[in-house]
Image (cartoon, rainbow, N blue to C red; front, side, top):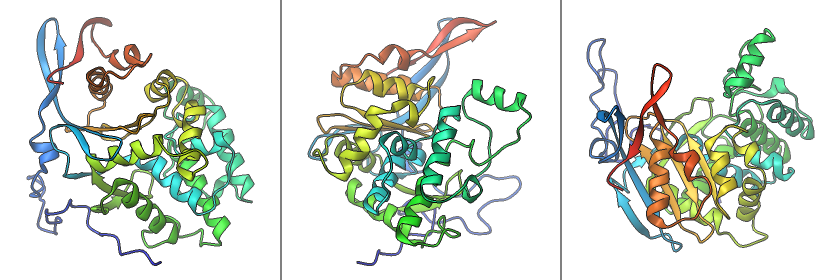
Length: 351
């Protein structure tokens, strides 16, 4: 069945898109701020020497196994761009469309990988399996995300490359899916391409709501907006999927190979390893999505897009829900430094 046209504007539902006169050199955009950002409660404080130096506002949604909303802090209904938190759902669309790769490769298709050598080797393997090469990647060239890998890369005299960028696993999977279906490779990033339509349909199905807005993600592929409730619902459904389904195949790959989803020094990897049956995916602009084995989903976004509070907020939500995990220490480790020494920390409040 043909897909319905996707919304072309990046503006959330109910908010007009910015026109040519919406901005100037001296003024910010005139778009209204969505409630999920503008009315978000303070969920974290940066405390230095016993003094609250800064605060971070955010919204959190927890969905029940049946998809209903169980807990809301802030707003549950305004759409947000989940950014890379959408990747496991995009990977599901690819599997449904015929992508057939090893589990560790599938985890990499879901990844914002750190650019460590084993990540890059696996990207090459996915491409080679489809008769393709690194030159076929269209994602934005960059240095490796991981600091150790990045320094080694630069010491070797290498410039930014598409394979090193954290989305190269996703793009390799997209290309391999196109090969499996005979779809055009040159236009796989275009919104009207069958691949991207499949991703949109899958996101809408799992989220239980239509895609509200589209834009271009940092890697050059489309990014599609849903509410935090929809994002949490989608992850709960993935994590609790019946064995043998495509959904379970994606979730099992993430659980079995979390180092391919993130990296050896990443909090998302530590969380998956330390939390029985869980899946998770971090995203740019301080988004985090979690699916628990019992079918509950968690989605959060820090309103200012700053990354330092997101793990602290997630840890507090997990504590409130009574989720047993060995990763709380890693998630809550957010020191504030003075002269290189801890003099405070980022702490959750109001959760």
